[in-house]
Image (cartoon, rainbow, N blue to C red):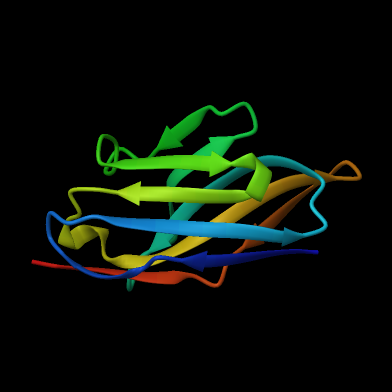
Length: 119
């Protein structure tokens, strides 16, 4: 099994910055991607940013140019640097890891970390 532990959420004023971290532990096979999703109250969970094993990245249009996803392969850790935060970025942010294990694609989630941006 794989465990994901997130940290770095909190309360910040609009225009400020936060950095989220997510460390993966346990028996990890072949990581396909690591990334971040978020869910605001009353809304569906949405992709924020993802970084794949080949280091390619994808971002939601709403965060492009403001957020940066990166990964430390040696530590199995993924980061999300969030700059120029807006009140609409307020949500619970979830770390996600996808891995191939015995020809099965497994999907793991962290417990979530709250990010609140005040106006």
